[in-house]
Length: 111
Picture 1: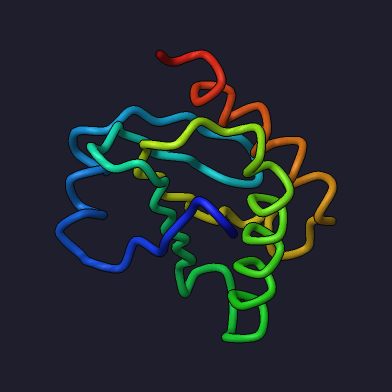
Picture 2: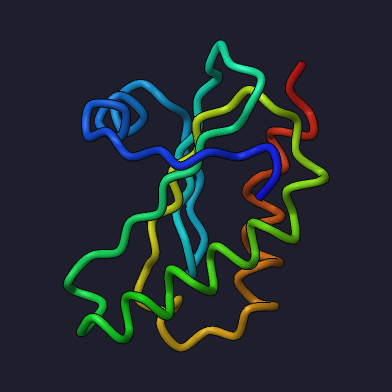
């Protein structure tokens, strides 16, 4: 991911949950907020409710790959958190990509 760095600090996740905008699909929920950087920051979360470590890691890999394919279309300067939902565990990457594309439409439209 060329223009994206990881979002790792807990206070940034909490700020996004409380002050950011959000959209939800059956596969993922996306929270976003503008940052003052020239890069996007991406965080991916999976709950233990999704299953064991294998299922959670698969969901993370699928979301990360879908984001990687959509990254060239996004404008830089956003903090993004993607939360995996139950269907993401068994979803195909193309389903998650299509869903994520619709949810990340904000980055194409916002100035």
